[in-house]
Image (cartoon, rainbow, N blue to C red; front, side):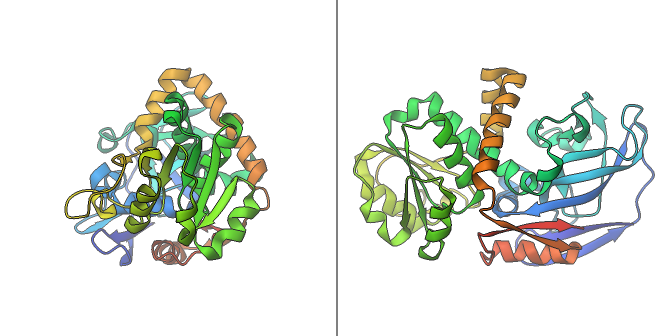
Length: 359
């Protein structure tokens, strides 16, 4: 029996546990039993912009319901593929559920791609699975960190890479909203290592200031109500918060000093009030960052091997930086997974804790 959390697309707090018999595997298919996954703001993004970027299409449900993608670990429970053995473990894109059937192709010692027909229109980045026996990023002692930070860290890595390719648009300061978020922390870590001349400024709620300062990843931390104190120097901003008044205020405070405005995260561009009925925003028009497109550009620039090595080096540095900064909140079962998703959706999670689900 397979169990999956179905979320109502138009009302994300509503959900049901869907159960169905597992079908016989087709020729060349592999059945993965899901062992663990994390729930973060990243998963909220997948749900909120699911229709815009096809995130609902990876693990189809029925009617008004969809399955939110997760990042996690799974073990091969059954295999009709000659190169993939029962008992092998993988890391990759998984449904919020108990099982996933895949059709491996492009198989190598380090991984494979799910060639299922319905997944081919979406970015190939999401269809790749790492085989842990030969995965340079895998550390058995850091599996929780990888699930929690890995995808978000890579987004941060790609943002820094994009800015560095553009010589930071002439900026001296990098301003990040929602500085306690895992993606912002990843970006701050990579910028600290690879662009040390850029000053990193984290904006956060007053209550999260101590946590952000404790991370040691930022040169300056400001509460949101102190945005008016931003230095009047050439700057770029990355908005993870999706708070329209805050974004307008950053643009207004910096004016012509703001050289580039990057949007990342769970909110539609229109919801940030930068087009349509909202008031005009000062300075440059904010641009939505879509990580898979930039991943393709980075791989083309560095080559697959060079890109993998660059990510792995920055990842190890980031793990050192966040060691001990937060603890893991491990929860059992899909009902707890669904409740944790709603908790994250409603902003009730503790930034000091990372949620790990064992379905």
